[in-house]
Structure formats: structure tokens, C-alpha cells
Length: 314
Image (cartoon, rainbow, N blue to C red; front, top):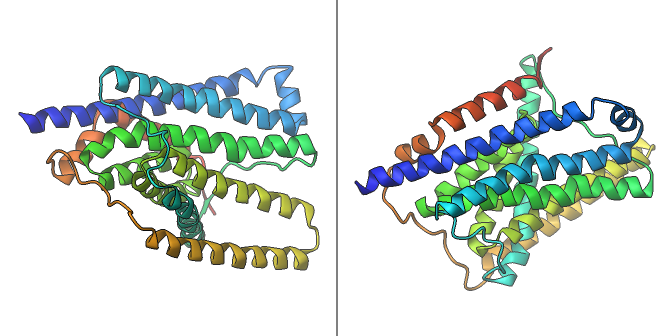
């Protein structure tokens, strides 16, 4: 009886997440349709600043909106006691988890590049949405906000908050892996999705240890902000030799800081372990209940169709 109740609870969590993903895609398409009309289309094509503003609106309306609705429904059902946007239980652990999380992101970048190279060698070209870097000061500020600030807040609210927190009832490890999978699904292409899954594992782990989604926000922001800085570097430095030198130096410094920080992260006193499941359900039952329900299946099919658009035979 108890197992059946918990299975239904997990199906509800999966269904709500599936509905949120469906609404996310729907709102993205509605917003895209609206800016396809004049005068918005001309401004969008001509102004990189306007593109960044639109990306910010897409994140807030398209992603925050559906998952805020999901949070409301979960709270109403009394299965989302907290989004974990509280102070971390250990500030030293939170601070050192940032270089640890960043190191996981770097590993994700490397493994994704290997995966993309392997698929290209087998005759399949994988692509992802591209962004044009603006040159004006205002444009670059908006670019950072649209790439680093807003996604860090909105995506962590959605994935490490709304998706992951209620799943912790079934074990932190399960919650981390499932939320990382949802994070990957949301990206809708095979370049960003594998990276998002791996990065999601690191961010989810750090969030569970510190019991604060703000930890995930910090890691997410640092990763995306570094990416924007590299975009600016590539856009501004025409000398290829100088660009390679700066790039290699930045990588050495970044890896060194992340490795040292990760060692300190492992040595922080008073660190808590991942919480075990509060209810006993086997892994297969948990995974099936969460992912095998109508809304989630529809959401996955939609995201697979979107992902297919970024796969090309060479």
C-alpha cells in the first residue's frame, strides 16, 4: 500500500516536470512567433542588444513561468516543502564547492568535445544554437546577463529547486541523477545535453551537501560567465598566436584553481553525507514511475524532435 502511494507520488512529480517542459517549449515557440512580425523582426536582426533582451525574456517567461507553476502545484499538493533557497549549512563548504563544481563542468566540456569528435568521425555532425557577441559596452553587459546571470538563477530554480528537491525523498543520489537528466533534456541538442548532464551531477551534489540551491547558482554563474569571457576574447583578439597563448594560460590557471579548491572541498570539516531514501522503492520502480507517464513521455518525444534538428549527416 505504501509502495503504491509512493509510486503514485513519483508519477505525479514526473508528470508535473513533463508538463513544465511541454509548456517551456510551447512558450518558446509562441515568443518566437511573436518576434517574427515587424517591427520586432527587423530590430532582432539588426540589434544584438535586442537579441540579448529577447533571450532574457525567453528564459524568464519560457522557463521560469512553467516551473513556477510547477512549484505552485507541488506546494499545493504538499510535496514541495522547500525550494532550498536558504543559507547554506556550511559556508566554507559552499565556497569550496564552487571550484569543485567548476572542475566537473570542465570535465563535462572535455568529455562532450570527445563525444562530438567521435560522432563527426563516424559521419554525424552535431550542432547547437550559436550566439553573436556584441561589441558595445551595453551589449556586452546584456550578453553576460542573458548568458550567465539569468540562466544561473532560472535554471537552478527549475532544476535543482522544483525538480530535485521533492525527489530527495527518494534518496539524494536518485534526485541528483534524475535532475541532471532533466537538465540535459531541457537543452535540446546533443552538444549541450551531455555537458548539462555531467555538470548537473556536480551542481546537484554540491546543492545536496550544502542544502542550498544558491550553491548551484554560484557554480552555474561561474561556468557561464567564464564562457562569456572566452567569447569576448575570441571576438577581440585577431592574432591567433596571442589568442592561443591567452587561452592556454587561462586554462592552466583555471584548472590549478579548481584542483586546489576541490582538494579543500574534500577536506572541509563537518561535511554531511548524501541522504539515503526515506522510502524503500527499488531503482527500476523509481525511474519508471518518474519517466514513464504521459506528460513526461510527450515532453521527451518533443525534445528528441528538437534535438534531431541539430543532427546532420556529413
